[in-house]
Amino acid sequence: MKKTLKQRLISSFFIIAFFPTMIGFFLFYQNTAVYSRQQLLYRSQRDLEQVINQVQAQVNQVSDLMNWITHNAQILQLLGRSTQQANQYDKVFHTVVTDLESQLSYRALNPYLQSLFLQGTNGLDIRAGSEASLNDPDTIVTLLSKTDYDATYWGARRKNAALFTSEKNVIPYRYPIMGQDGILLGWVVALFSEEIFTDQYEGFTNGSSTPACLYNGDGALLCGSAAMGAQQGEVVQKTSEASGWKMEICILQETLHQQKNALLISISLLCSLIMLSMILLSWRMNRMLVQPIDRMAKQVNLIATGQFQPYEYQPENTELDELENRILDMQQDIQQLMEQERQREEDKQQLEIQVLQAQMNPHFLYNTLNTIRLMAAMQGKKSISTMIEALEKILHANLLTQQNCITVAQEIELLKSYMYIQNIRQKGRLQWRIEGMDTALLQQQIPKFLLQPLVENAILHGLPEPMDEGCIVISGTHLGKEMCLAVQDNGVGMSEAQLEKLRTELQSSDAPQTTHGHGIALHNVQRRIQLHYGKQYGISVQSMAGNGCCVQVLLPYHEIEGGVSCGDGES
Image (cartoon, rainbow, N blue to C red; front, side, top):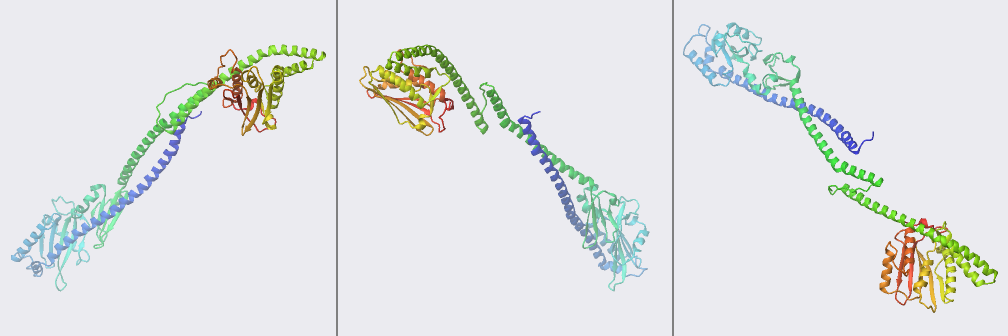
């Protein structure tokens, strides 16, 4: 099935625009997804660095508190007492407890500090914090039994041993107190809630959507999800240069999928917008291109079948509108040409009928004259026989219906016979001659009896009666692809009004209405020439009263051997 222009246009849009667009969007989606993942990881690394700095800041605050404790003179005094006097409640002991509670009350660590134990090697035991009195003393013994007990130690997250507490887990911390001589005097043991560190990254991890873990320098878990290793996703980690602690977060596959889905939705919306634009563009192209071309195609098909039906449309001043206007102009021109051709055919048919009717009498006359010529020759009347012979040549040429065109030389031969008869009639007072015709021009073919009516018209209407001495000159020239034959007399000529009337009659398609026959011969010759060669060829007349008349005939000239037939001219 043959596709219409509209279908081909839509198909072309689909093939040229849709597939490359889809491939481009697919590649764009893949590259953008990879880039977005990389950006997410980069942002996570950057945010982790900020979080680890905030965690380190919390550690520094704890260190600052420990520094105050270990440099407090009263605390050092208590740690220096004997075992029997270590827990004696006196003014110094009271001052230490009061100062310790005061320090904890205004420090930012206070909300996170569950218990604080000041333990001396001499048996000193001072406690602070909301849950200090709820803890089992064995807990403290366990923390103090760790290796390197004279070093600062952040322990792994452990279950909160305190009774009646809301904190499920705590982070233990141990800090040694050294004397001036480097002897260990005691320890500070603190139990912190996980929030001391989780509050630093809670906003970053968005709660449980991004699991996070914090490990100390030994790799022990301080806080976070112990089951993070079982999560499916992308793990990002950052290690503190100051403490060696490591922070890990897991960007879940769900988060990555959500990001991809958001990107896919955005690209799908953009793709839908582009497809909608393509549909609108296709509709616009259909309106601007397909519809005018369809109209023109239908109109050309109608013209091809001979139907000339005008139609109306709204022009938009485009190239297609210009083409459509040219088609409408061509339609009008073809219609006019067809009408002219029809009229020419009618004129030719009418002319052929007239020729056939005119041939009936010449046949009888030709046979009769032939008999008279033979009788005159037998009786010795040579002048009569010669005159009749000249007339027979003219009649015989008229009767050759199959030969519509003859050469200029043959036309001149017929004129000789005709002028012989006319000279007998005028008693030898009629002179004529041929001028300027070369051999090539004499071989050109022209319609038969083209010059004879012009010569006859010059004798009958141009030369005066009675005639003293009339002269007719027949000449011919050619220039390029045209030639001009002229018949000139030295007769009475025409006035300006008569000349203008004759020229008007020659331009008209109707024969002149006259009872004297003036102009009829010229009009007939004009019609024959234009029927053979077209309206660019024909007769022109120049004349002045008292100065004779010149009739010029413009015909096509062909540089081919043997001349050109009447049918070779332009029509």
